[in-house]
Amino acid sequence: AKGETYAGRIVAPVIAEAASMIIDHIGFARAGAAFFSHSGVISVPEIPEVSVGAVLPDFTGTPKRLLAPLLTRDDLRILIEGEGYVISQMPPPGTPVTADMALEFRLGWEG
Image (cartoon, rainbow, N blue to C red; front, side, top):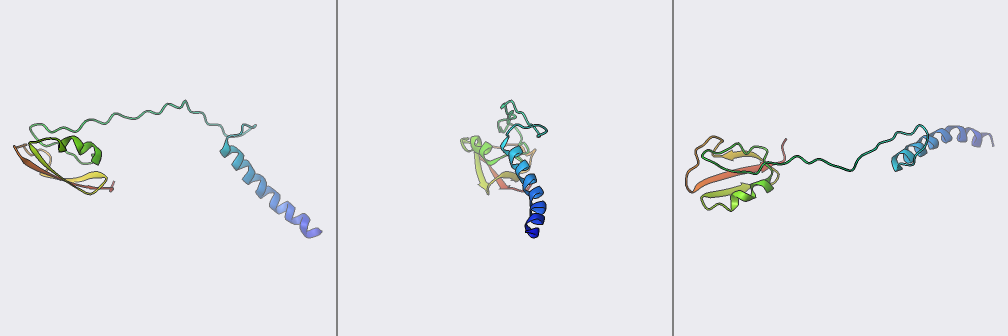
């Protein structure tokens, strides 16, 4: 019976701490518990539309989905290789845009 008493003294605090963490995580209100409130409003920054003018912009970091409008242009030939975000482009930024110009984008997840 002595062993059971010592086991209770050792295990009880561990169980109490685990229960306390679970109760806080689930969100039951109780005295001294950490409390977090959120309005439910999430702000998403507006992403500028991709466009090509007289010279090529720097597309580095542009997500693949934002390159889609370029695919509808008749005056540019677009090649997209990979998934994720633009990590390199050819020709480089600042190159004057010419008729029937070929644009190559290499995409990846590198940060």
